[in-house]
Image 1: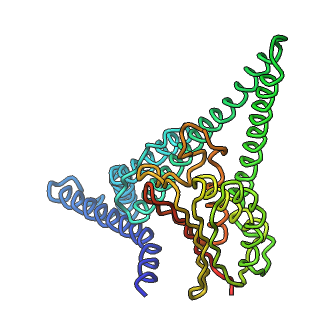
Image 2: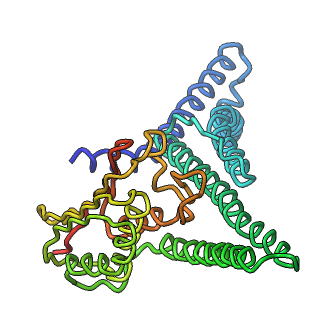
Image 3: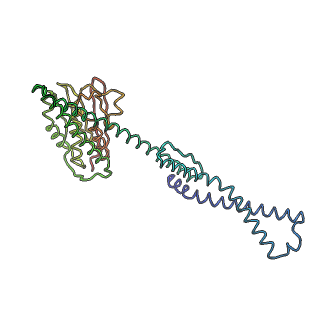
Length: 351
């Protein structure tokens, strides 16, 4: 009820503001005109002939009211015109890329709302510009590093005095860096595609527990290679969503915990059902994430391992985050250094 009254008051406040302004201008005009004619009559400026003339006096009154009313309107409208000019100047600066511009209009109420919406828009555009700049810088760095590496080793491979072992080692590095470039390009395209989606398409109802078990089987070779202990506790719960996109989520998260868990480590996958939601946990006993790095874990190109000794380009968790939000779910990460990391996904079951 209060929202409706506020909305109604905001709708009628500007017309009321203008109506009141017109009434005040009219009232002041009439009062000043009447006062001038009264003084003119007192000081004998209006003779009896003019007073009895049925045409001249109304014309004089009309001219006086027009001049006085126009003068008062010009003075009182300066504030309104000033506010509009401030808004035009602010939009002009915003269009030129100055996202620090803010408006502080207080009245009438509609101008205050306009000011608040403008400031919110400028803040959002400023945030988007920062993200765009960071994305370009990070992408350029990630893209340049393997290219420089490939170029360097390709030049070394031109030497005829290399042994077979050295040549094979350098070729393996070139192949690895080429695969890294291909993975980076694929992930950037995938992230751009998902980020551009606003409506979830190709929704089906499927068994998410079975999908997670299949994801575990796909990564079984990596688990065996590091001799890891896996504890999977998932049930056959059905959810509505894009099956292909959610499959990327489970594969990315599993691959991530495997990557950052040492040999002979423990990985746990747990699932439980709450009211209208499914909660899925991926937990490891690896090295964990530093408190400084935890807030950045879902940022594009962020990598906990700054030495880049582990495979990856920092886009996997950003993709996971976008997909979960597209499904109107949430993902959170908690971690304790030297003890492990837990990813908690809460997703509506779609019922």
